[in-house]
Length: 89
Image (cartoon, rainbow, N blue to C red; front, side):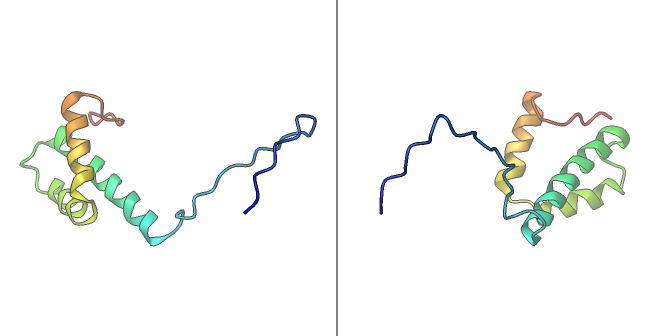
């Protein structure tokens, strides 16, 4: 295989947006639903309390969709106060 040619500094450079092949795939959908149910569960618990039964629907959904490593990391982020979403709104 040959060497990659150097870019010509006089040639204008065009930048195009990168598209992930995973978008709109079943895995993308599962990841999105995992995240959304995790966030919805903790928003629900914050607003209504852990004893509010409808919150359990979100809990069961994210537990079935999300890899444990992800939820462990998000739990650590929540506890450290650097989770990327405000859960009190």
